[in-house]
Image (cartoon, rainbow, N blue to C red; front, side, top):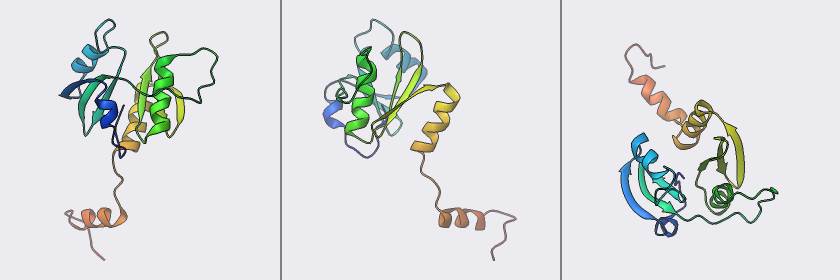
Length: 142
């Protein structure tokens, strides 16, 4: 889960502090089946894993007949905060993302990456863009 403006310190307290850079090895270790932190959420803030094994609130609007706690939790945190939550089905490997109380399914890696870049990296304002272009060699200021 990616923390944005909503403070998730209450959720972080339900898990185990990690304080690590986000990388494949650490995430692979956290989510390796059978490890103690496997069934909880990892909270990422400012590019660092704050905690893992965190307990998320379950969605109360979940209507799918086949209940999956992992997906209910992904949607639940997106209903209760502005965080972006990502879940991968253990059974099918399908990647889903929850944002603003909506669960979107069937992401491939590239689409998820593009979506996360769009969501998490601030857009350059017109004045910032103009200032950057004015300082670039070969750019003309009118």
